[in-house]
Image 1: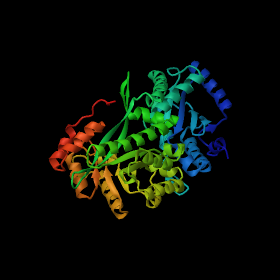
Image 2: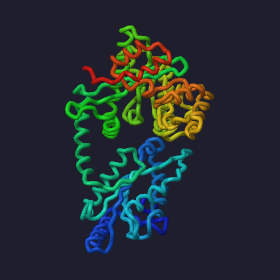
Image 3: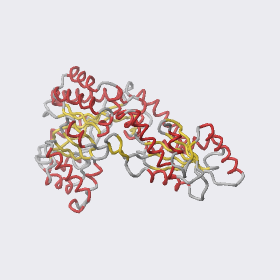
Image 4: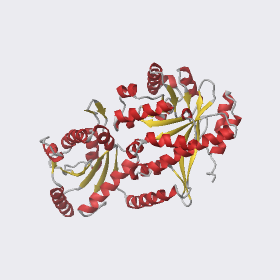
Length: 454
């Protein structure tokens, strides 16, 4: 059954049309709006992280999800609305003019997706990025209205998804800026503009620095420091994350050995590996090659994976992680609690650690005992204890949080209380002056990142 048939199945609500007929209806809507006979709003709706579902569970499962989403979207809109599929996970909507505000139409779509879907034994919490184009401010013809709504939808997605945004004139310029940033990123690696910062992970009991998380940074010769939040999504979408990820892994391994040669106490280096890297090639081969090339002992390397990597192909991912574990490389689930959680896969995946997302740690606040997030943190700590997993809390910023984590059995912590991510030389200086006392932990905040040294 096609997506159009699915939408029609709901009866009252939106009516699906092929793109050509939708375009005819939209042209008529523009003409009616020009004549002052109606208010015209166009929505573009893109499902967030839909590729994780199709890549992990298959195209058939993805189509089943689209059917369920389509049913809800259809019933959310007033009768007389029209919908068409732009591609696999994007829809264009022309709501009926029933006197609602533009944002109310979009809110109706998001509200319809609030309840999770059950699919192939997974509970999928689906969200969407909704862009709004209004006649005549955002366009006076069908093409310009669709383009405006599409740009607004893309902006929502870049900001994390699950939101609504009305088109603004600056978005056209932003789209051009993004293309320019993508072009610049393609040359950044070869041009020596990328560098790796290291943030310490501290044992909450002994206050000793146990590991360093490797974090890629970009210093553009003209634009200056560019946030990872701006360029990592571009790297993911374009596939550049494959080359960048390999380079970060190789650089971190070589840096660990360089610190050894300078007499620094051995530290583990933790390197992030995204689901996209699993899609692009063999992560196992990449890691094995990096260890063979650099000579770093496998037990000195830890890979940090997000929960959503489990949706790609649970059996294949587990097999890769098992091979790495036999090699001696440890793996951790990063940002635990914010992705597609599946406890059955958590127990079967060969991982050694969980990292509690900073959203939970920071939200503990000044009164940890009275914070609802404290319950979440305690639950994760108890789960990890029962599974014999090390726990690292991210985003630790004050002593009350640190004491709470220590009291409830957290293993390690990282965050601005200890240090910001540092260039290699400043990280080395920090470790050398660190003696494991509480006062030293406090003093770690005095180190500040310097410009990348080349």
